[in-house]
Length: 95
Ligand SMILES: [Zn+2]
Image (tube, rainbow, N blue to C red; front, side, top):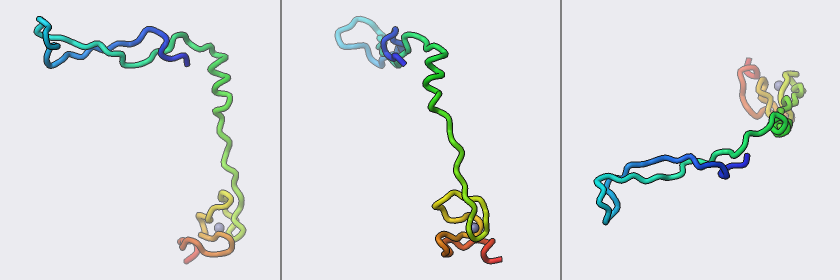
């Protein structure tokens, strides 16, 4: 987005005491609170940005011991085995 080039969005805050030397009984300070886009984007530009947003599903393998689908290089959540060893004690292993 082309931020901060458009008209600034302003906010006014009341001061507890007016600045020294002023005759006013109350004073406020104006400050810029946020940048605003100068122009809207076309639908084509939004679509081009979102063309890289798609997610791919996690690749799963079957556990060699219990053949449960699990992510590769991860301890099996069902039997707790990894590389032929017990890594985590699970209820499926004890029963
Ligand atoms: Zn397993």
